[in-house]
Image (cartoon, rainbow, N blue to C red; front, side, top):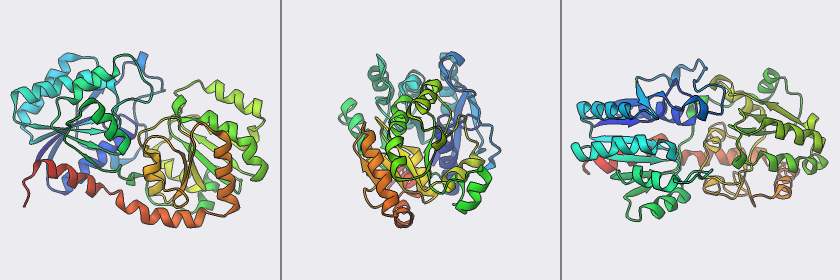
Length: 377
């Protein structure tokens, strides 16, 4: 089968680009011809809150062949991308979709492809309705998604969002695969040594820091947590929200000595260190669909404490691979952390994660996509 993927990709950074690299290689392993059309400019500088849009890691596993021709706000490049599709004549175009900002670009390419070729179109939906809503989001999403023949959604909550916009969508629910690119778990003592962490007990909050991810709730829970457990909270990720606000909370709550903030994008080579050094990963989200952070944690056999929002509770099994707690409730987060340590759940939950993560395979994702297009035997 000939496949074109239209998505962000390395050397652009982030989970979506990493996802594209893994998907590309899995398709190649199954002898499909694949090309990837990606962005030469993903976001205008004025709209990008981070320090750089480029992945500065040296991770060779992310490097794939791509055509970086798209400008998210340059319609002439959208037409060039369509012409590339027309020339390649793929059986399937896959759009990786996660926010309406890209809907005009993706929708325009899809519209031209649908009208002037016989190529089928699939949207691999990470989100349909964004976490942080803006006027016009639903209209833009509907424009892009209505060009598709097929959909992959990765949680029930995204399925419901899709059917809210397109009630007759032809879809499959396939769980988000684990991120294998960060290697295997390493010895916890060695990871702590390399990170210069002396604390016996370590919590991890990882990833871009945005308001909906609820770091403020976790910080509010910390005074109650440290009453029962002496621990260190690692906050690791680049701030896309006001960093000073969180720093002031540390002072106000008098928890500075119990919180260590690494305010930067983490190169892929060191992601393993932070997860291996931790006991449990905490996702106190206020809203969610699914989260790639859980899939990194599972790959490295780490249990998670998550809030009951979006699809998080579909992946984290309460009292088996972690805890699922009420959202927007710092006291519930504190109770879960205290219970985790009081009942010494780390070993048991980690063993359960090892078994549970087997269902989150890339083979399942690739086969589901193939079934939409390839004839049944």
